[in-house]
Length: 489
Image 1 (tube, helix red, strand yellow):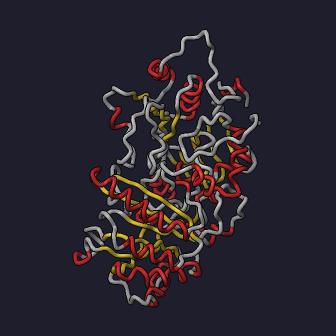
Image 2: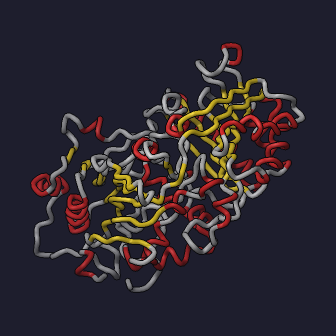
Image 3: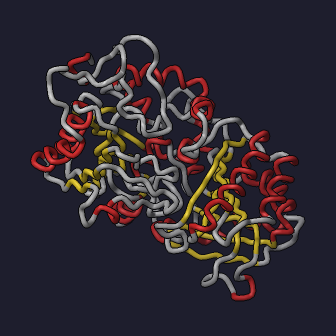
């Protein structure tokens, strides 16, 4: 790439302009895009603007200049050219699930991929092409008809783009690896407005970086995944009173890493929601427990989790086991954690759960600030750990758990309370972590050193790829990797 390609000055990283030309305002650019794009351009003052700028996290209330809803890759290419050439701020929205709200920036232009929501499954090759604005529910539904799935998330409303580019983990990770381990190729638009396909054989350096490096390198308009045989899974919920958190975690930290790869179970501290399958007598009670997913012989589901009887705390106060279509498991928490709630989260990777860490979990589990606030420890070992540490940008192949602390509530008046709880919990727990976090669990108010800690030994290589494909950091509304110093390749 060069100065002409990007419309920017490689030396300064600022828009290259003609000093004799009249600089059009953002409003002018929005008007021009409306004449060039197939998809709608929704600007401040338009009747649908406030609805268009809403995202999953209701705590985010930013006001971009416009939401550019792209209908296809051609729209994305055109929008990138307009935004770059006129020196405007750019953000990208896929499924709109960004916890930190990085898809919205005040007075910027958001390229919104939500109209690009489609899935095409090839059952013979067991592959699927997925549009960049799709949610997990779209792929889960389409692939399930053929008894197939990919390891991705625990909620069907999650955007597949942000989850995948960050690495991606979920119920199937111990069996089939991270989401990026099932990624075969992508179609994407670069900072210079060009369209490329990246895979192991085309733009392989870019493909390496995309697998965990987030949205730093361009806009992915379509993903191609390798699918895996999954149809009906065994689901189990085992809950204990919150006072038993220490005993349950002491058992869980020994059992889970050695469990069969067909079994995954994430630990949670929670307040029991009202409604099925929970009996009325535990509604509203603080508890701890494990959400299990078994991909083996369904008749052996109970046998697979029989070890819960070994917990010194005694048998679970509540136990539920049932076979469930995989999309039903993926959507189990959708209604409880619906769009528009106040969210604030922090994360870390762990290779062990120390006694000191358990002390912290006990303290904060007993003081959950709201009914929806929670802490999860997601297993990311087994199949995910067998991938070479330099095969993708994901920097923690030796991690066993990806933890997230989430302060959640529907009432904006409680936003500060859930933030303070999550920050305090993270502050006390972080010393017992591996230092970095799943990039999608890093808050937008955290420092740049957290991003570097997350990519570890891969950061410098990522910065070189960034310099090659986005030397002026057009794509910086993310957990940003700054281009390496020097001229663009």
